[in-house]
Length: 82
Image (cartoon, rainbow, N blue to C red):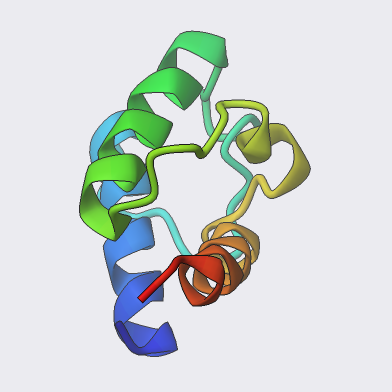
């Protein structure tokens, strides 16, 4: 998955989980109404979309914007066995 495409996917999932279609790539998950239960929902959807089973919900605390989370996920995908 290309980085731009990956960011679009992450941004769409953010928007869905936070029920806010106007979120941008630099919006902070927690400043936009996110909390731990929504973080779990976000990560669950990202695990499926990116086929990375070991993403922990705590990743959202370290990478709270779609841009930051996309960079993290892009690196994780590169580490997966082919």
